[in-house]
Image (cartoon, rainbow, N blue to C red):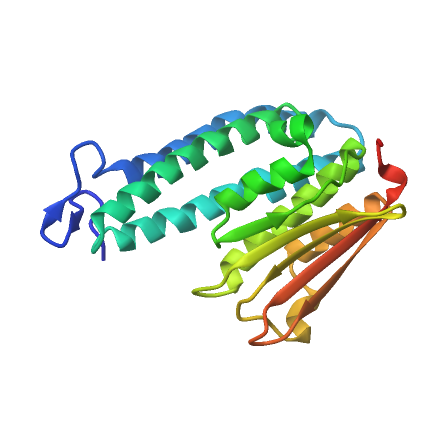
Length: 248
């Protein structure tokens, strides 16, 4: 068991000010989430439509919650690496600090009922690159020039990709990598999230809250989703939405 109150790397103590950073980051993330989500919880009690309540719940689950789960995974990894490699652990600790700040900003945005700021300002490509930087697996993004789409369409694609990356981080296994691709033609906006990890069999492909959330999100914007996976051959999640949602 790792003693986070007296962390050592070999026979070296982590530098002063960093030895409790992992614990501090975890507490900061939890406290910030509790405070910033309060307006969203209050709003859930006031919203009249079931569809709107479900949308807010999905935004919180698929966005901020997934980022916090990924951060928890990263913090556990930092603790393990810190036993043998101080320099690498400190570099990852800097990344985790940045992840905390980015997650706080997204939670603040969602708590006020809007989409992640980067998605609103810069579109899918930039927002998904930022999400890939926070992912538990090494992830690349190929976005091309897909243009801008209606807010609800961009949100559906963004949160589906974030959910798929989080699933990959939990289930793909050690050494796996992931890739996100976006493309658009005259008729369709398409996305694909794939990993080269453990994969799973047909029974696992039919259930799970994450997959149901993705299917519901895309159905709400007249889209569809497909899941392909085989044990030992990774997983591929693809979705498409009609181009009628484009803003140009």
